[in-house]
Length: 325
Image 1 (cartoon, rainbow, N blue to C red):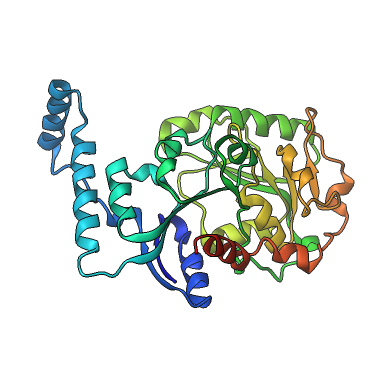
Image 2: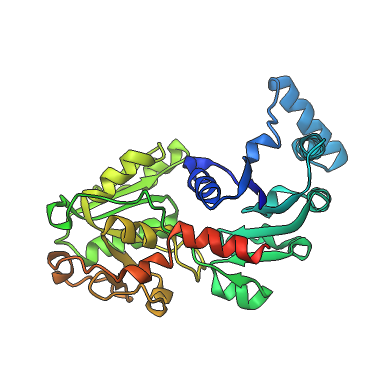
């Protein structure tokens, strides 16, 4: 199949998907969101003029220019190109309706695979009627909007030779700071005073640092990616996963635990309904947030290979593309 994959390559997110599609003998072109528009203000004067424009017209100058750039990019990209069998995107909200209608002219199937719930990212549901197939990992969204259920995936590079027993810490987590998450983490640490934590909050603005006063929690203003993330996961026996807002599907933390053979502590009650749930490896927190001390001292129970295989990236790619045919 000829595939156009539109996905931000933040933290190299798109790369393994493209590699797997190629491995499965598909012809793939990948476009990052930044390929569609690179808007930036020339200087302070340009920014002021944009604000004046918005005050006078009640319209965003930045959005207007960005939308025009996206239209030009789409038109120029498809010059002298044959039609794609499928165009797959992960964030439909990047495009206005007219952009999607334009893209639809250049493919046999227009497909969306949503990586956020529609409760968390409601802007993604605005033009779903234009898509031939829409996948979601959130079963509540699937029921409400007649979407196709698909799980997130386990990247085959998420492997380790570091044993659980040699881990320095009991629990690791890296989360973007929100007030709610911070309160959850403090409650968790208070409920489990004997554990050794390696918990980080990522902040995107210095002012947020003053809100994180608990000395048991680390703060970083740099994204934790690649080898650094892997090293931190390997140095802990378990990963802590607090859901953000309303979420019914499984986060990537679950799949990282499968790959790196680490245990999981989560607030996601839905995990119990999946075949990868294993009480020896996973604790779904109740309102007390307490974790049995024996959880950290017992070995990791390796799940059956056929269960893990269902959640591998290769299965995810086959699933998406088979329904796009």
